[in-house]
Length: 180
Image (tube, rainbow, N blue to C red):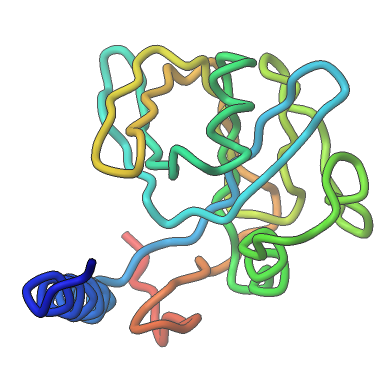
């Protein structure tokens, strides 16, 4: 039997989550597609929860919902690849953000990609750069896992482009980029 206290707690939690998303939406982030391959199975998802972690050894981290297909595939394959998207790739970002889409090779139909050198996970062509990683650590964090990867291979794409950014619930462009 639901009580008024239960309803108030649910409402407060929903309000807190909405406010949390609103506040964090004011932090601009780059957009990536994280991919994994296990045997003939390949899968990818859009992720903004990505960060560099260490220079010695070279390490990055991604945060993935524990219920996500990618989470299971990364744990099985013990590896993943990250493609940093360019501003021209907002449609790819939207595609890989969809929860319901064809899986496997069909998921990458119409998308130029190549297998990463070590993990064999898809690297999307036309991005800014990529990292090919071996999974080293898994840390449970609420409904997500922090997956730490040691960088085994990395590179930049030849055609320089501006980054794809996510800010306040939408894609954004840099107005200017200062060169060093």
